[in-house]
Amino acid sequence: MTPDQPGGVRHWRHVRALAEAGHDVTVITSKVLHTTREAPSEFAGRTTVRRVEDGIEVLRAYSSTGYGNDARSRAANHLSFSTYALPAALRARRPDVILASSPPLTVGVLGAFVSGLRRTRFILEVRDLWPESALATGLLTNPRAIALMDRMANYCYSRADRVIALTEGIRDGVISAGVTPNAVSLITNGIDPPDTPITPEVVDLPVGPDAFVAMFVGQHGTYSSLFTVLDAAALLRNDPSIHIALVGDGDRKPELVAQAAARGLENVSFAGPIPKRDVPSWLDRADACLLTYQDAPLFQGAMPNKLFDYMGAGRPILAAVPDGEAAHAIRSAGCGIVTPAEDAEALANAIRQLAADRPAATAMGAAGVAYVHLHHNRRDLAERFVSVVESVLA
Image (cartoon, rainbow, N blue to C red; front, side, top):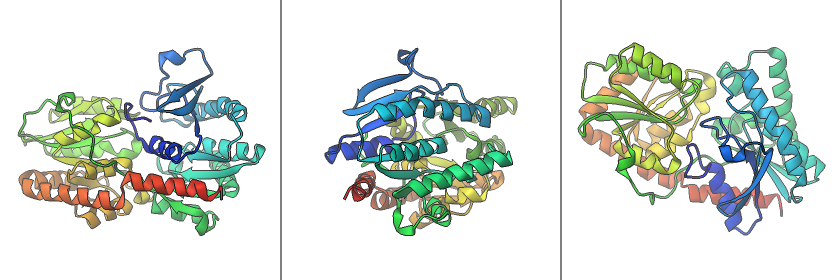
């Protein structure tokens, strides 16, 4: 995703860094925008579209649209993309190295397979452990499908010259699957330098200027456990000074909107997905930022990009998450309050606490800024990514 689109910009930053380091880069990706799950009309009737985007050659291959949270429609999307991305990869100039980023796991398999056919180096980036992620979210329950995904993951690991892990938990999971520790590099998500202008006019919230706004920005998926936020909002409904804003899209959003309406939660508002470049403007209106996950062991290793966006915006974080990496980072930085995952009462109390102590909230936000720019500067992370790629070319 580029900054003018909703979603993360990790890949865009990394391929830009490769290009700036003097490498020729070709990106093969889907025509479908993940946030809307539809393809732009300009791509209609074309299986593969070649474009130059921000100076990078991009091949956008067909994949099925309108997929939901069920395994069948997601499998159709993943398999259809691989089907059309394969000939695109074979027609492209022979590369020195192929890098595949998973999920979806099928992209990892595709990268491993093509690297074998073209006799080239292979780097696998792992942003979620599979099949563990599918099991934790309930996306996958069939034992045969689980076994198949396990074999697919092991195939990718066995083919990879290097593995890039998004979190410490993912790194440990990859190593436990048999990858040599020296072959695994940790490159987390991060934050850009503070040079994005704030444009308050893009923010539209039904609140006054003095309201304490607790805001979530991101995918409204099952794993995000935003129903916990609605339960907390119900406990706060009699305090007119506090407002909950949920910004973004996702497969659970229609149900969240319907439930908030049915429960009469007038202290909750919803906004659609926003371009990455507008995220700082929205976070500038927040007084605190919400980070929630399901109470599952897998999410102990979660370090989502929104965590770093929140820190970079100088806003305190209210995290209802399993005790793990995100909780540890927030406590280490002193930039927020951590409560147990899926505990609505504890989350509501944390919101009340910050709303009643604005100076403490401001101090937490400042601590987050200092921490994230010291430890998770995206320019430094992109340089590390380039170093990993170049290490397999030596």
